[in-house]
Amino acid sequence: MNKKIKKIIRKKNKSKIVCLTAYSKKMASIIDQDCDIVLVGDSVANVIYGMPNTHKIELKTIINHAKAVRQGIKNSLMIIDMPKGTYKNEKQAKANAKMILKQTRCDAIKIESNNKNFQIIKNLVKNRIPVMGHIGYTPQFKKKFKIYGSNLREKRKLINEAIKIEKAGAFSIVLECIKKDLAKEISEILKIPTIGIGSSVHCDGQILVTEDILGMSGFYPKFVKKYVNLNRIIAKTVRKYSIDVKRKKFPTKKNAF
Ligand code: KIV
Image 1: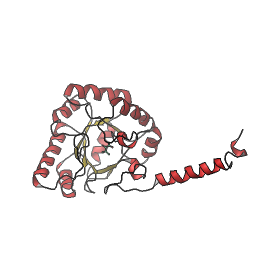
Image 2 (image 1 turned 180 degrees about the horizontal axis):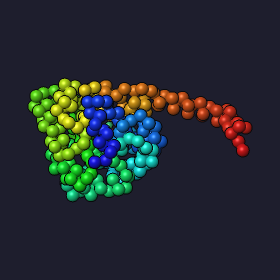
Image 3 (image 1 turned 120 degrees about the vertical axis):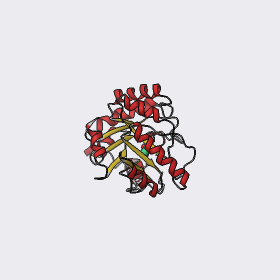
Image 4 (image 1 turned 135 degrees about the horizontal axis):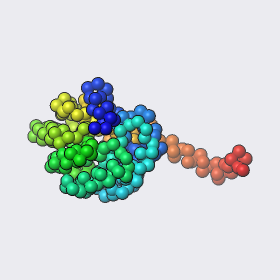
């Protein structure tokens, strides 16, 4: 197993695992300085391409972003989301995951659980492809957003799903929008680290979409903390530039050759 992955696993019950998404070299190089994991998420579909969901993003698009991200990463573990429809069976999943690893030199791939694809994870791991799982709200398979774990049946189902993913050999698992008590229980049961998004402080680590914390995406549900409003800063800057150009205040002599 890759040293960086071992390091992530060892952090469980010791220190929190810090994760963010990146789709470009520059953003990755900034995030790399303070994060343990950089995920090239399929959220690139919504954030960069303005798609209504993640369903239509193509593998080649994710790979191109990942190649850029790779150039910005020195220390953190780089994980790539396999897009919807690219891991429908063991053979397809293995071929696509191998291609992702070869073309991008990432450390691992992430696949969303549909509570059925455990054998696919097992086969990937058997073929030395490190896998991060993803349960709860899994945008590739769910039509409507909801919070998971409010009734006993759902709780049992999610606990079983998490255990099966761990048994299949995943080295970590994302818990998305799972109620705090259940996130705590799953994090205590599993030996692999849980990475929460909207699933409380009880997870072993946290992930958010970088553009959400920067105030650039326009998507700010309760589980997002907007640390800065970059959209406002960019708009103000563009206005200043526009005024300068119109009033011939830019370029000045200093900016000319
Ligand atoms: O696509 C993504 O960005 C994600 C997470 C934020 C977990 O899957």
